[in-house]
Amino acid sequence: MFIPEGAPLTLHNMASALFQVAGMKGMTATAVRAVRAVAFMMERLEMEAISEQARDIAVEKAGYISEELKNMMEHIKTQLAEEVEKHIATLTEVTSKIQSNITWNQAQDNTDSPTPATT
Image 1 (cartoon, rainbow, N blue to C red):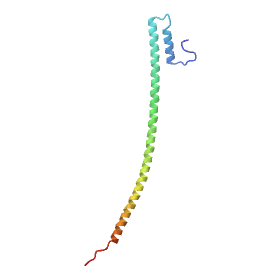
Image 2 (cartoon, one colour):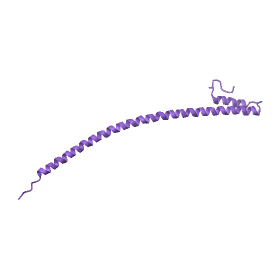
Image 3 (cartoon, rainbow, N blue to C red):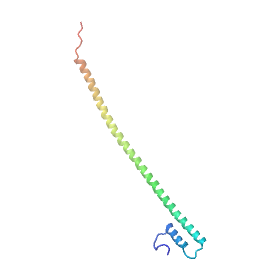
Image 4 (tube, helix red, strand yellow):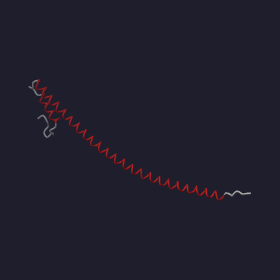
């Protein structure tokens, strides 16, 4: 009658039916205002329910994204630490070789230079 057959029983559909009832002939002005007031409250309840569901979904998704970002950052931090350790080891090895070469070159310079003659 006021709602199509098989339509889900929702606050919106019930409010629509009430608005149709309020428009029927023979309704007094007071009855029309009362029925419309109930219909408007039902629509508001539906909007609040939808808003609450949307908020809950957003909070849930934000929590999931936050956890995923945390895990990703931990993984990146671990990978970076490993790479930095490798580079430090390489730099340490190269520095050690350079120091050895400098020491060897200095020793060679000392043995290659002529000793001063004494009189």
